[in-house]
Image (cartoon, rainbow, N blue to C red; front, top):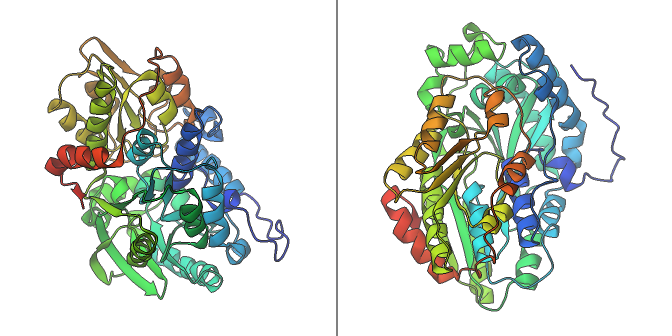
Length: 470
């Protein structure tokens, strides 16, 4: 295990946002990608090649040890959780955007299509929460009750200085592999608009500019551990169902073996809310405070609720196709992105239609296949399958990714470097930039889409998939 040094941060100095928010987490990547695109810059500097890229063909124990060492270098220590200031994290997010007036803003749950939607509208995207990872020195991937005990102590330290947060702890070996036994994953959600967001909206929104609130409506069994702290075993992004995390589940035993655990030790705590919202939901207090703020300041608030990530991905892809065609472009070339492999600026520079898969699970890839099967054919389909770095029975195989590319009439391409080490290698966000830079230019970029037109397009394209726009 990587040695932890408790005293790296001066007492009372606090931690900067880039130290607190987990590298590679959804909120961090999406804010970075959106802010760059609004400056007319791509994601070439976003993400770096991790150490796991050197261990693609290594035995599983060697790979797990390398993953744990890498996690140890970036995770917070137990002592540092008391130094986290959520207000500084919010200020770090808004500080990444260019200083100018915007015709609107997107806030809420993380989703790759939200970054593309924001760029089409020429507006920022801000998350309603952020993710952290904290050291678990004596951790075990197959001991969810021990994870809960350790996480409860961390959450208490965190909440002592951040009463405006709710902390959802997620113990998911299926999506995090061996890291679930080396670190604790905490999803912090603001229970009201943070002050930095209020200042940003007041200073940067044009008069009467709308606010779009995106909300992930997926549910998952939840244990309410203590005020401000809740716990869940597994997550929707794992590609598995809650029943698959039962001790008798064959899928769970496969997952634990791959992560270095033993299914015989698995004893999850009993949930208190069998149908609670999953970790990326927007807190009701956050939504209420956003509604109150917009009402007082003359900005309309629109809610966009998606029951599955595929619904927003499909609606945004359809929106892009119409937007590009209205600007005189073909809207006939598709890029299927996955996880962190996205680059909104290169997409609009090349005049591409983006479809975003949350991850490399079969469920996520099947969503892309169903949407493609019901869409007007594309002349070219480029696919960027992000290797998840773990093995799981829920993952899509390369043949399924090839089937997605097969929908292209003339060009059908799956990126070879990302496919070469799939599913256990690690690929940085900038790999998407390298691939998309090779696409021919299709300039000029269309003028920003008006928010009313975007809402109409989301309703038209998303309603059949269960998207709710109100």
